[in-house]
Image 1 (tube, helix red, strand yellow):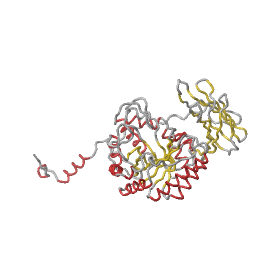
Image 2: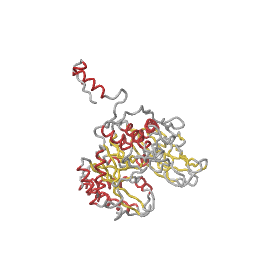
Image 3: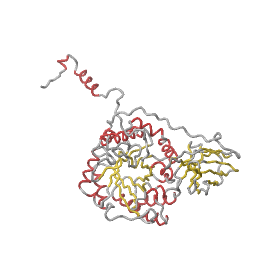
Image 4: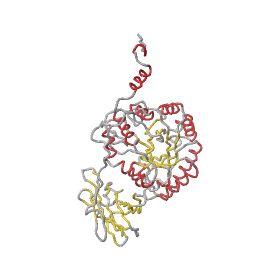
Length: 487
């Protein structure tokens, strides 16, 4: 049965009836729809590990489905290979590496759908070594081989009309103290590609190890930082709070402030399993479940959509040949609905977020160091197998305008040797009102776990120093910051 409602029957003016209907269509108070900034890159990483997948109909259909979610940017992953973690050359695999023709087809299809295309080259290692932990026997030969790969894909990205090109992905061990090598890679890419350039660092440690962000257009982070491990299915609020309480927002903001570059998450993702927020890089042990993945998506949107210098997320991964299961892909899952809602500006409102950051550790002995006074502090530490913790202490002394730095690495109560120590010295720039990297020093510990090193002559001003254990059998740990005043 139908019923027609007219202004005459209600005895009210038509304008009042229309106004009442308009009010009824509004969301209730406190349920304001969430949306993304206008310049946000609504991205996804599209993956294939076969030479012609990107040129096939299922890939075209997957791209159309991705565009239907409101996605505006798509990064196509292509992979070259090393045989072992110490190999000094990189090469395409005739079967696994997407062909140039397939990549050009994929970029053209994405552009025809109204999306910005991006190329994102990866390096994988056949013996299972993680790309962020490779140590080529001949680093110079490796960089020569790597530049050949990047030069090839920069030219292909230009040919395919890409808007963004990623010059490297998660190559942490090859980024530390190799700024000049990467500047050459970046310069070569710029000579071939007229769009924007990014590097995809492995989490925050990788981003902080790189010293070449100033040469790029974006600071890119593959953002698999652990959030909440106390609950296998944490709330959106708990996950959003963790971004602040674990210090991630502060550390990323420090990178932005240091280099003056916008930040994007070149990868962000979670498996559709319980416990995925505790180990977002993969390997969650819980049963299959879509809600934890969707909640982590919602939390990431809620946090980062409110940060003015943050410009977008590329979700890992949208597959050229969909096969969802409990893997990272959001295809056909609750997380896809979350993507759609945020891209359309109709997402559920966000919970109240506690934006309180962890307290900054103060150096023992009361802060600034001058004359021949010294300061040291216990390290932030990690727990190793067997329950022992790795810690690194740091002391600083000033002799004239030279800083002498020393400390010790311990595992539990015992000294721990065979570690690499990297100390980062930053100077406060009063004009720009931010910390600027002044020195990066590297040393090895002695047999009893101690280390000592000195800076060159420093300018007058206030400095802060932090030491990081980056290698060896002791594990990884970071000292608290020590401040030093040079007069």
